[in-house]
Amino acid sequence: MTTYPRYHVLTFSRSIMRQPRRSGDQLRTHANIAKARRLLGYTPHTTAEDGLAQEVAWIKGIMNL
Image (tube, rainbow, N blue to C red; front, side, top):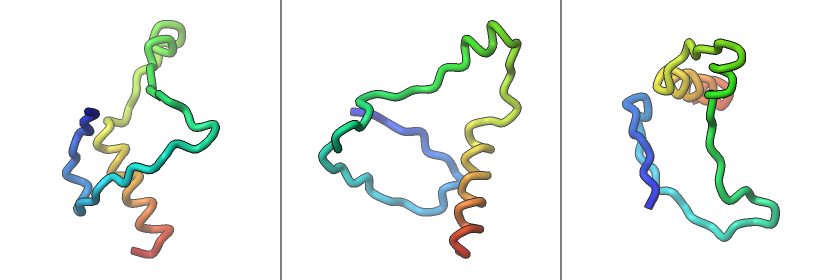
């Protein structure tokens, strides 16, 4: 079972609706910035929580919520 971190910026609770996979859907995805760190010296300036808060604010803005 996959667990997802819960952030306080989410002020609502929703159930995840599982549906059959569509043709072409990726089975697994993940982000890994190790190569960018190593080759470019990249360091993220936004935390996952801050990024999620910005995303929620943006969606609320475009949906007039």
